[in-house]
Image (cartoon, rainbow, N blue to C red; front, top):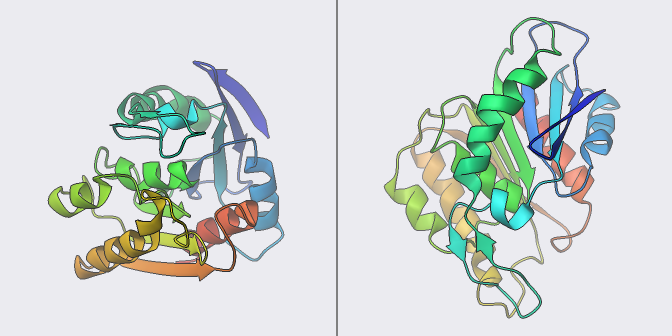
Length: 224
């Protein structure tokens, strides 16, 4: 593993021993990149490089635009996704890819929760990612479904993975209760565009098996 810091973001690179393999960028709430990579190493998935970014300003860096707090104990999302994506592409990516052999076969973007939302939003802003994985993605986010349905991606992805916990929409919270319906409608929309997608419903709520669910999504896009 190689680690470095750019603009207070901690970046951990888990390089493939084989040259010119895929590179997957995983934005993390904590520092679960090492755990995710270990699960994938212990499985039969193809060799790849994982670049995990942590120490994010979560509700800022991962959110496409401002929204108010979604509950009394929450903080607002402050719409910093465009700025963070520019940092990721202009600074983090070149530095991370100095540590890999050859050139990336392809690049993927992955994330859990708000980072799953960011993964989907990013394909509307850049053409560098050809695969995306959104695990328990925050696709309840106000106006994101309408945004997706009315905008064009910069590059048609080869594959997109979606997952949710089967209890995530079972809530009184007016923001969160639409998450399964939105996710299913978005996945169906991408399928209608000829994109190869999957939607998996996992047992449990939003906070169950987050590392394992993250590994499952990355494994799916790697195995295509």
